[in-house]
Length: 441
Image (cartoon, rainbow, N blue to C red; front, side, top):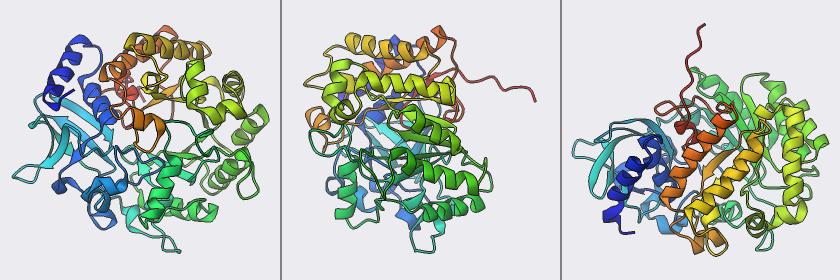
């Protein structure tokens, strides 16, 4: 689709799906297709006033670092906030995914005020996250807090990627949409600091700095995550490896943050270990619902665990954590990726909704990340445009409807729901849910 017709497409979808917040339509388009940055909108990395993009697990870019031009040297902001403009947008937090070829561009006007431009027209004001005080302090080793414990979602979530690679390795095992291993390689090749296995003491030291300087207590949750572990890391299996960080954090900072772990769907005894260590929320991501697509896109997960067993373990983990605290992610959009995916939006939405109904009927609320077709992945290479915007808008509608069908409310650990209030930045599911009524104190 030529960029000249992008505005028309977006406005058509807003008109056709009036129940989906207009903010979410723009947000999904920016997440699925990326945004270009004028040099006037880039950060001065860790020496500046703007919080730079930390590359906290995947690249979430539509080009490799060498292809991003100045945006590879002066990082763009971690996130942007859209407000106002001709569509009168409510405050919308969007994770930054760089695409120099995007029809969307962030640039400063003659007064130096940043805005988002589409087809050459200014469509909203753009706010950028201020450099947090805790990013200005380094660990005893000289490492930065941004490298060890970056924060995202406008400071709400501390993202602890404690294992920067995945043991599902190579074409026969790697998930076909995931660039965790390439992202590790490209940062090393660029000479950037990118610690493979984070030392538990350094994680605690970084959290100490965040706790000391985050006086407003904006950081509310942490996520422990990284690649899948099929053997061991530092002599520990997956539950033990991720669990020992949780145990150390909860012993040092009891109750300071909501503890979340993203790991594979593990057997019941392993999941119990997470719970025993003080983890409150478990994310055993199921990635894609369709049986054939799971086999094609997640060959390592299929081979080591298998789809049926994966789903059984997700349901089992609800007995340990409570259904509300089991929140598996899926990658929204890969259902439509060539060569194996659905060819119509109707089929893709029907399949994904079947998965939502399966989990929500058990009280489990999945969430999703909007697929970014990263160019070093097989699916990104074959589908540089990602999934159609209409798929993403209809998914938001189906997601909210399915939650209502089962009487569920927004999951814990994601900040507030509702357009203008949500902080979750890698999809619009929280923006599209009803805002909670403030409870009387």
